[in-house]
Length: 147
Image 1 (tube, rainbow, N blue to C red):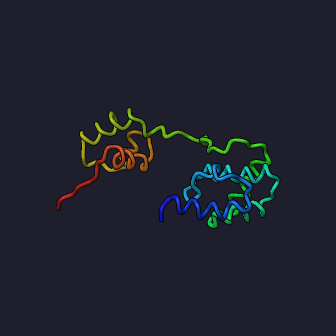
Image 2 (spheres, helix red, strand yellow):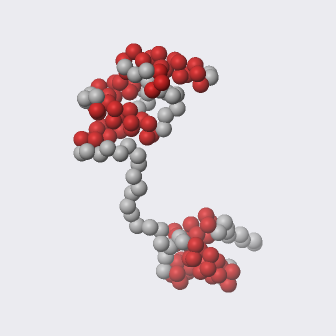
Image 3 (spheres, helix red, strand yellow):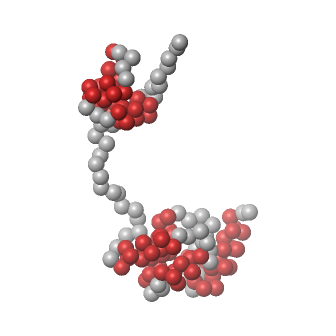
């Protein structure tokens, strides 16, 4: 089905209860998370409760989650105005940095290819999981054995 047919079909369903013009909706068939949050915020600003907002969104987006609507209503009641996703604070991946990857791990592996993960981890004082990630994801190395 073409994009215009999806748009016109969804807009006809949506037009009757939204009160917006056709120019408001670019394409109802494809919507990312931020646009969905904007619709939830719009319902909040119109004075709808969570049940009314969920019913309003279900007319065009039947797979919308009730928990998402409730969570965003709670955030909006707490004066959150930004609908963009904010970066989360947390511990940075200090072991997986270019210096540790290229210089230390690579030199250790080239010096002795028979080392085990726990030996490299003890030597560098990082976790075995970090060693695994560095070797497989960043250095694209894998263990080959021949018998």
